[in-house]
Length: 245
Image 1: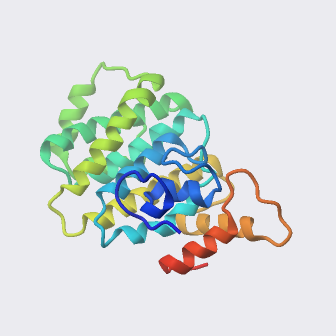
Image 2: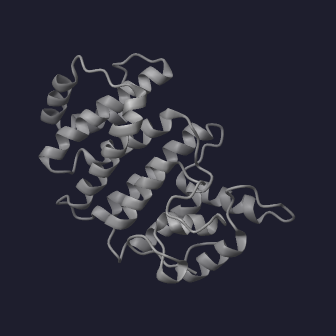
């Protein structure tokens, strides 16, 4: 049974990052880029894994089942993951990164408005609250973005991955009491946002998503579905990491 650690690992005996553990639980080929999870969400998970301290990293394990099967081609996914990352980072990162995060929030909101057929100025309340905490950066971002159009394709390919990377690194280096908690909360919130988009009728949060994924994998007589959790491996993971079965 692999144990969570930083970086990429050749095989389970050497340890596992968050997404390698996900590939293991999903019964996929050992990889930190498994097909069971949206690529940008997987990228966020790898970054959070690597920037979390060794002492706090085991607390990420309970989130792993909730990313298995969480994937799709909707470009809104990339925008929502980037937006979640920028909102989490904006209030705590260094000033130069705050400017980038504020621009990222406005850009992601613009892309989502275009994709969802909303007015470009119609911001999510969480975005308004994040921007209100750093008014100078917000004013600069509004001025910078005036007249600039970001295409959904360009945002998905370039801006979204860069936003996620800058956000995680900024939080990890921020002068705050518990960056590990902020990183875990960011990943959990991004998972929740993806569940809300892909499974809107389910009403999941990261905790209930774990319960549902495990229940579907362990239901008596049920055949394991593609990208479902392997129940035996999940039981071993719970036993060795202290998670709840």
